[in-house]
Length: 251
Length: 251
Image (tube, rainbow over all chains, first blue to last red; front, side, top):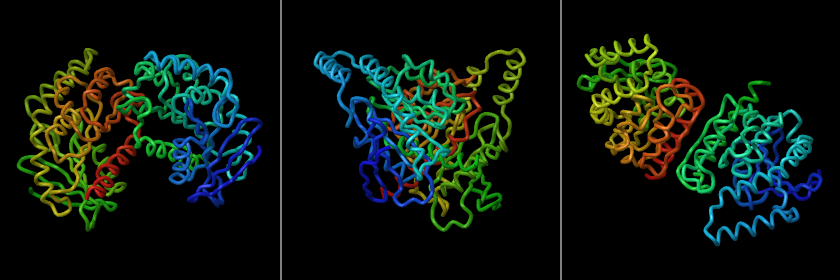
């Protein structure tokens, strides 16, 4: 892991790093002397590791819950070189927008292809992050990602035993039923009741397919991007419960 | 209001009262010097105002959130005289159990009839409770009730302007679509994914019918009575947000 830059703002340190060719950011409580549970935060399509929503989310997890939070750029996003797939996606996206054609299945297909490319990055980054003093190799690890972040997260949660709780959502069942059935960790799953990109029944089917004993669906009115603010607070309660309190109890 | 009995246990006072012929209990932080937001807590069919689950729930709201909580006996329940309707319901219930017949529609029909009888009690009790020093006439009022409590609560939330937030759930759409559409307050709605009494689609339809801008559905695996413990904590967060914090902001 190469540490590139570190700043501290309002009690939160922000460290830019790279592992191999994967750019990332790590947020931590500034000056913390004990280890923090880690949340991996996956951005959505067209965003990147320092998008406003990612930074805002990360800082709240640090300040409210005392967590460390790491985000990576997905392939073709943020500081990573654009690829043919991203350029083709954007061209097709604009064509469909101009024609007023439905976008949901188009974005979903692209997300699944992109998730396949992004997936190997996360265990590599996690290996490196767990070597840092503030994180450590045996601390609890959570995952937060909606939409594209869930296309990645369902597969990661199914395959990566170090992840012990995840907030997912805004994604459908297509192509994810198999990995979802192998997930065993507590899941909080967000659904937008009037999602224009993900059919409600498909999101219900993905939630239903998740193999975990403890899973909870939170559905709210509104379109794909209109997740209400109280869900951030609810995610903080979820991570506090599973990464902070449960972790203390099992030690 | 007649005050019948008052005890204090572990920092929570429990006052038994009666308004007209309606028996009730009020839990409050013992020795509190400021007014508390009030939560009205409606028990389920076959339970009563001092059922273990009611008392446990009430005490947690008092201790964790600093709320006052009031519960009433529904007609024919607890300290109220049994009625023909309750006796007929129990006979029919046992017959259906013995025959292995489905119970959902039978209980739902009874709940709607019982809710019609129970509904007028709540504004009467609320009038009396708001005359108490610890509550006051202009404080925020919430409502918590599942199953029968929701058959009552949807109609009460639609008609009673003093109620400003409610936790509801475990009930279907039948007979409640009209009042649900008139509800305008924040609602947290619980659904059990494998509910043997309430068809999932019917619960979805009731949630969908609620007219509130802010409403959130929490669905969890398991049968009718298997609501997971984390939903109690989530209800505390919900009431804290709407009865404590929002109330401070709007004063």
